[in-house]
Amino acid sequence: MNANLKQSVAPESGTTVARTLIRGLRVITAGAANAIHADILISGNHIEAVIDRDKQPAQAAIAADYQIDGTGFLAIPGLINAHTHAAMGFFRGLGHGRTNMIETFLFPAEKALTPELLEPLSWSYLITSLRAGVTCVADHYYMIAGVGRALERLGMRGFIGETIADLGGAFPGWESWTRARETIDSWQFSDLVRPVIAPHAADTVSGKMLREAAQFAKQRHLTLHMHLSQTTGELHRVRQQDGMTPVQKAFTCEALWDRTLAVHMVSAREADYAELRASGATAVICPASQIIYEHLAPLENIAATGVPWATATDCAASNDGADLLNDCKWLGLLARDRRIADDTFDPRALLASVTTVPARALGMSGKLGTLAAGSLADIVFVRDDISMRPAFNDVRNLIYSAGSSGVEHVMINGKWRLWKRELCGASEQDLTNAFEGAVREIMRRTGIRGDL
Ligand SMILES: [Zn+2]
Image (cartoon, rainbow, N blue to C red; front, side, top):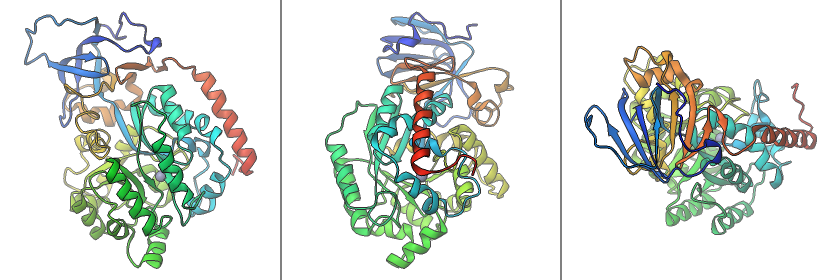
């Protein structure tokens, strides 16, 4: 038994593992309730094979540059957080007990942001995400290049969108759309960090801008990621401005298709959910955030319509942590509390909501969110210890018992990025110092006090 995944490559180097066989794992593959006993063969940045040892026990020796004993670990797909604002780490703990938080608190504070602050402000949320087994985020914010730099520094994957809005928000105007297109046309990042189109919301983006952004996204084969029906206030404003619901507006502007992440759906009715279902778009539910902002989305409408749904954490202003598995657990419990009787929110569906479902909306089906031949080597190694016993339902144990505290090592794109819960190739102390310096600066500029 080797509980440390001892290997002949120093994890600190972050070096690409040439061709590595990790033996003796238990592996959770897409859609299964229980793990299989398997070895994973990694070649460069992708998985070459997942070898089921119960089906192929007499497998001939596999030629690999390195062999690692993975006994004592459960391998799960890298988790995908379908909605974050990583740089809002500076709001941590300040969102509780506020009303109309978005308009009265967030927008005024965000006006004080300048580009050089975005990278350091992202460290806290991204590092805690990585330690929670999150390997990929769909991030939505202003001056997004700073978030992209932070992701590259940690070796994390991200689909990032420059927030656009012309009717409201921190920086309203058509310039936001010009900036977003320029950022994409002069893309400065590796394959790890890719662009999406990110309209802010149905009440802060005009129909003209939303329609143009959706057309652009389709032409470039990009995901469209937007807040939709986040609050009752948004519903009322869109009704006044456009004479329809936020979902109807997005539908009318042809902004809903199978590459759309429609985030929140709190003030959406069953008919809106049915419209989303027909469009192929994915609803993104952020349980902690929605409760702190206003209230949880109507989960019964998800059960009634069968719309695809992803779970996400949103941001530190409205969900102090970034522990995605914890949000999955709470979503399952809240569905139970609402007496939603079918299997809509069972453990397998909860795991799919942070793996295969968001992978599809990001255009990465078969590449992310699964452990199979041909998928990218984004793998989370969880301690397969007594918290995972008895092993009657491994996925339920993962979400309801072990949680993210069992995450020990994380590989992204074939490189070790977390080893024994420590960052590889970056000093957490240095990044913490930079984060705290940026927080002091933003607090100075805004006059926000931490004791409010
Ligand atoms: Zn959000």
